[in-house]
Image 1: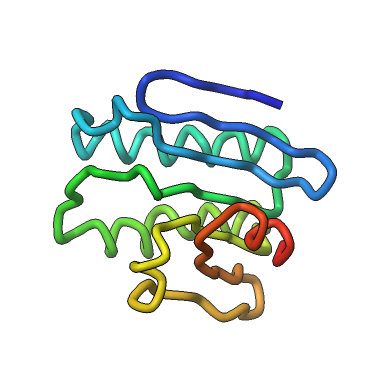
Image 2 (image 1 turned 120 degrees about the vertical axis):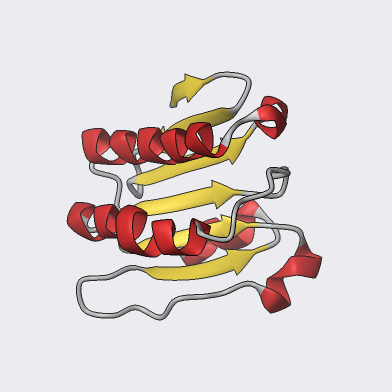
Length: 127
């Protein structure tokens, strides 16, 4: 079910496995860093609204240059919201060439597991 779409991003929800799908649209290339963070917070808001426990985040089209402080924001501000929601699994869709160097997160008590995939089918099978 489509929840939101604009020129920057799209958010969909699949109720069968409580999966929130997030993908970047072509217009995001002109976003500011604050716009980027707002988009991340908005999709997470849908996660709370629909009680999504699994996320599929498609970054295959992502072309924004993030500043060096992004990992700190992600770790200290964004991921704690995932923990509060009770997210179980996060699957990133990315170009296959990037997967060997992309970070993955093992499941820890109260935290989510993160893996990277080249296509939706592999990601959905994992979830």
